[in-house]
Image (cartoon, rainbow, N blue to C red):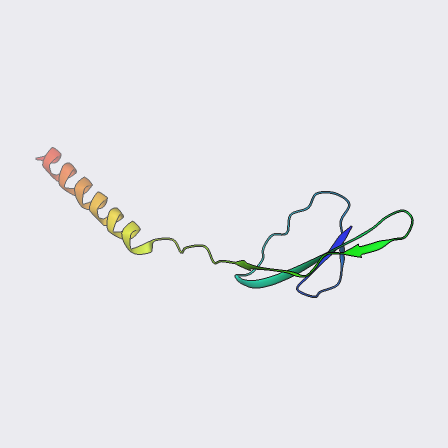
Length: 81
């Protein structure tokens, strides 16, 4: 068995496999197989989309850190007096 991803050279598979590190966007794959008698078959070309992960929420994280820091500052100032 093997596959061709985005029209590139075939990759041979010897068992289960995971395709990782695909960039966001549209991709295509075609799967090939042959048997011990030499018969070869292939799938249709399958198109799929990889979506970009949501970015880390920077603004809420910074706001939360500022609030916690301010709270600690007030707490320790009151505690020292």
